[in-house]
Amino acid sequence: MVSALELAKRGVRVTVVERGPVAAEASWAGGGILLPLLPWNYREPVTRLTQQSLAAYPDLIDELRDSTGIDPEFLRSGMVVLPPFDAEAATAWHAAHDLPLEPMRALSVAPALAADEEALWLPRVYQLRNPRFLLGLRQRVEQMGVKLLEHTPVSGFHTAGHRVTAISTPTGALHAGQIVITAGAWSRALLGEHALGADIRPVRGQMLLFKIEPGVLTQIVLRQGIYLIPRADGHLLVGSTLEDVGFDKSITAEAESSLHAAATAILPALAGAPVVKHWAGLRPAAPDNIPVIARHPHFENLYLNSGHFRYGVTMAPASAQLLADILLDTPPSLDPSPYIWPPSAASLTAA
Ligand SMILES: Cc1cc2nc3c(=O)[nH]c(=O)nc-3n(C[C@H](O)[C@H](O)[C@H](O)COP(=O)(O)OP(=O)(O)OC[C@H]3O[C@@H](n4cnc5c(N)ncnc54)[C@H](O)[C@@H]3O)c2cc1C
Image (cartoon, rainbow, N blue to C red; front, top):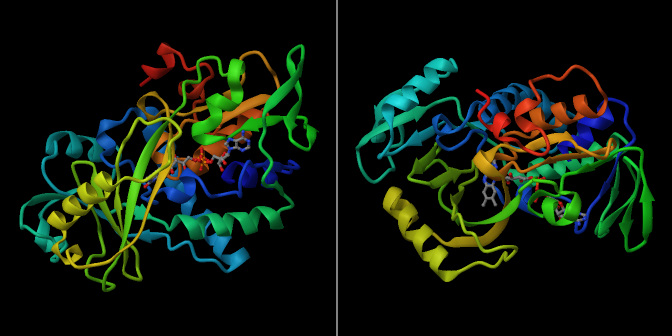
């Protein structure tokens, strides 16, 4: 959807061909934290996309809010990282990227937490509310003339020489000058024999949604892969599992009890709070979280923007900008080489 918006703004006529309703898969299911959980553990190509996206987000949010009246609740809530953590690596990464990081006692930042332990405070971490962001995006792309063709699964490609001439759908072949695959965890399955090393696979993540008094916790909190994301109205998300179970999106009692126990140990106020909802989404996993944003190696009018794994909302604006630069042959806003198709060992070791 962000790719569609970026292309439409640059004058391209866009149709989104979507198997279900738009905005109901991973982008809906995610937590909306706009930074990798421990950013110092990721490679520079991830950091470049996240930093450029962060710079673009305020304008994108203003645009959605002003044009649709929908507030995606883009908040600078900051993140408290509880032990264990690598303070040295975290400090070095923040210094290198000119971002603030403060060692703190946990309770001095978030008094409702269970224990007053050493923590890292990352004040410049933002979040947004995925369903609202996506609703705003939907309305905005429609305002920009993007056509949404929902309930239309793409099942294959018609090709001639170095071009894809059409895509197959149940209602017949659809023709387009350029075709961009943004099918998330299903991208490799959709591409079939044309995937050529774009090794994108589903990784399930389950989330719990609680409701507590607004204001009990206002910061995102992270301990060892478990995070708490408080929304302004007292809803609080707890995530997430990382499960290699193929395209199975079911939820499990084990995940519910382990997420519940881990979250309650961090924030005792959750002990008696109702679980409002429990869901799962499929992340489009790529090695090292590095997406493919590129033209196909053989087909000159086929593109991929996928494989954002755990941080696809975070990286969306910069990924869409780079995709549009490549598709329109304009100078790229960032070095495209780490995101080439097929991903190569050389690109993955870049920086
Ligand atoms: C539990 C969880 C927590 C997360 N938390 C965060 C977070 O805090 N921050 C963050 O940045 N990221 C987070 N993520 C990751 C992020 O959600 C994903 O990286 C991102 O949403 C991927 O976007 P996408 O558009 O590529 O995929 P999706 O949003 O899954 O969209 C792909 C679309 O393609 C459609 N499609 C598939 N096959 C076909 C076909 N054959 N024909 C037509 N349409 C098709 C699907 O129906 C779907 O609508 C989280 C993910 C999960 C699951």
